[in-house]
Image (cartoon, rainbow, N blue to C red; front, side, top):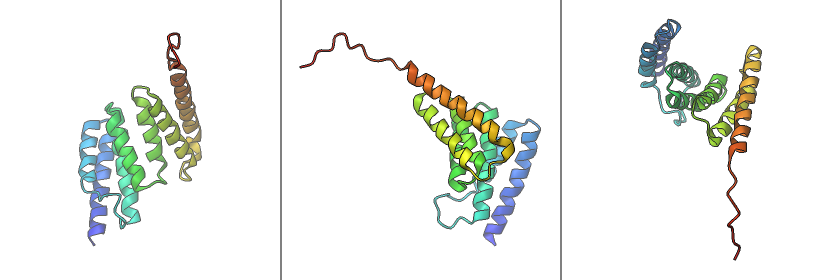
Length: 164
């Protein structure tokens, strides 16, 4: 009974957040999604019912997208990663993880993580065929950024190196 009531409550908040998001009201959407997120169980709990875990992942993905619109990459990344903890089969969780990493200042580890996230997105059976090209392009951009970062690494000056 409690699970059903919680599921109804967060589903209603998700719908309200979605209306704000669709209207471009991102601050309001984030606030409403946050009300839902505060009610979510810990994804590490063994007994999170599948329907609740699935809905939790969707809400977190939605708030992640909202944070991206608000230029809050770190918060967007945290939500996307938590969404994947709730539902690893949710392709948008991995997609948004990669996108959030690509929003951040380029660093090798971020580029590596983005490549891995986009590869996980490609591997999701839930990824619609219509999104495959977008994911492939994002993966190519992340791989390019990774290679550019590796190429930019300076080799130490060995001119004064003395071996003992």
